[in-house]
Image 1 (cartoon, rainbow, N blue to C red):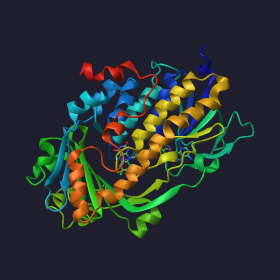
Image 2: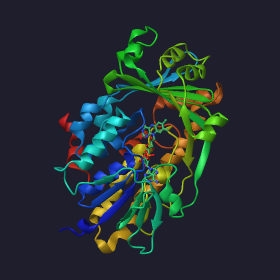
Image 3: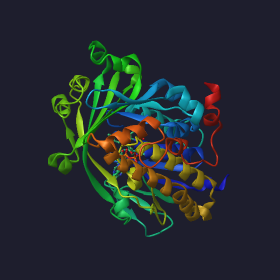
Image 4: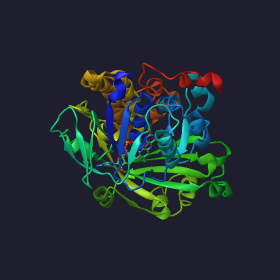
Length: 422
Ligand SMILES: Cc1cc2nc3c(=O)[nH]c(=O)nc-3n(C[C@H](O)[C@H](O)[C@H](O)COP(=O)(O)OP(=O)(O)OC[C@H]3O[C@@H](n4cnc5c(N)ncnc54)[C@H](O)[C@@H]3O)c2cc1C
């Protein structure tokens, strides 16, 4: 038996970060328990993009066939100007990304991606011990009477001890607060509408049909606002994220329902195709205040470690929050998987060394994009558009750096051979 097999890791939070970590740890032979507060595991009804840095990790976990069933592949990244929809810049994705980075740029429905990860965690035939997943298991207390075996206590009074407790419980992480990490939460002043627009409505309208003719990952740039959209589930839905200044109500409530009318009314003077697109949204429009966490390299306290939004929640302006959480999971598993029982503390320190600076740079770059994306028309905007045309990155990090991701010591062959096997 490898030394690592005696480890027990408890993960608070069964989101995309927690499940990627659970699957990665399982595959290294560790026993993993996931405690999820919600009564059902799942994800919000919205899309998600994985750039090559995250796709590489998911494929490396052996999920290629499952992902190929649920993904949609954008052919280009397109950047448009708010006033007339003119294309500022267009970059081929698809095969060019695979050839350059060895992994694809893919879009999914979040629920589909979450399901793939959950099924793999629970698969009795998968490598390593099956992950023990509990719902209705909100962590409300941490008992550290024995510092080497932190106990997560749930609202129902159940106790789960382990060698390591991982807080993967999202931007408002309870584990983070309970373990006494600094409060790093910052409100951005902005909010995001999320909507899924039926693809058939997009196709039926000559004004929006172009969105279905060729799949893109599109960003529109305008003063104080931007807009992101892409097709998911092979064209079943156009996923829309619309970023605008936040209202006091939404700031107070964090999130809530919204309507297609409200969403379209945010972009009255933009190119006609924008309100034409947005007004087709159905009843499932929602709005979310955008908070982020200030960059902070303290991710571990004793045997309590943080992962994903709990330690590096970022504005979604690089579409990298979940992707960085996936990198966390892969690196954490490499370190814990290679450690003996005496080496847990050193392994956790190496996890932070390998991840905190990297994720911190993405946090800062995502934040810098807030101003960069929202410039009023003028000289700075023209300079920005010239930079966007070069496609060497947006704010402070290059795509080349971002999309190559955190180097793994033990990259899986399947990911490495992806580009040759297509
Ligand atoms: C509009 C928008 C668009 C985005 N687009 C992208 C994108 O395209 N690509 C990308 O990579 N990222 C994107 N992100 C970021 C991404 O959604 C998040 O970074 C990611 O979901 C974080 O994953 P996580 O597992 O750390 O946290 P979460 O997804 O928040 O999961 C935390 C889980 O913990 C559970 N939980 C909470 N408290 C407790 C508790 N006390 N005990 C037990 N369980 C608990 C929650 O119920 C939840 O299931 C976007 C974000 C937004 C807002």
